[in-house]
Image 1 (tube, helix red, strand yellow):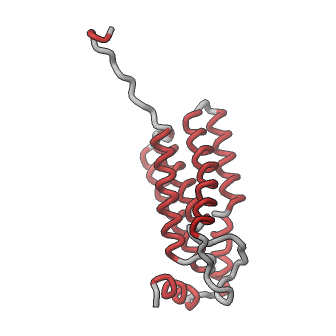
Image 2 (cartoon, one colour):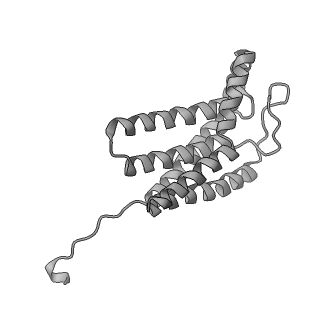
Image 3 (tube, one colour):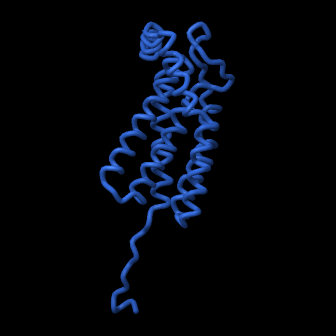
Length: 184
C-alpha cells in the first residue's frame, strides 16, 4: 500500500461527524475567498501605513502564487482521491494542493511582515507560531476530507514556502552601501 493510500485510509478511519464539521470550517478558512480577503485587507492596511514594500510582498506573492499553483496543477494533472472517501466535490487537479500552497504563501509572507513590522518579541513569536499551526491545520484538513493525497499537501507546502521565500527575498530591504573615499 502506498504512503498516500495509507494516510488516506487512516484519515477516513478516524472520521467523526462533529470533527468533519470542524475540519470543514478549517478547510474553508484556507480557501480562495478567505485567503484573498485576508491578503487584500492586509495589502490595503500596509499601504495606508506607508509600508509599500510589505504591501507588494503580500499582493505580489499571492497573485503570482495563484498563477504558479494553477500552472503546476495543469502540468501534473494528478487526480484526487476517489469519491467514496472524498467529502468535497472539486473539479480541478489535485497536485499540488492549492489550499496548502496558498496558505503556505500567505502565512510565510505574514511571518515576514510580522518580523519586519512588529517590534514586541513575544507578539512576534505568538503570531509566527499561530501562522504555522494554521497552515498545518488547513493542509491536513484537505487530507482528512480526502480532497487531496498527503503528497499533494506536502508539495503544496513546499512550493508555497519556496514561492514566498522568493518574494520575501525580492522585497527585502537592502543595506545602503557606504561609499569609500576613492569612490567619491
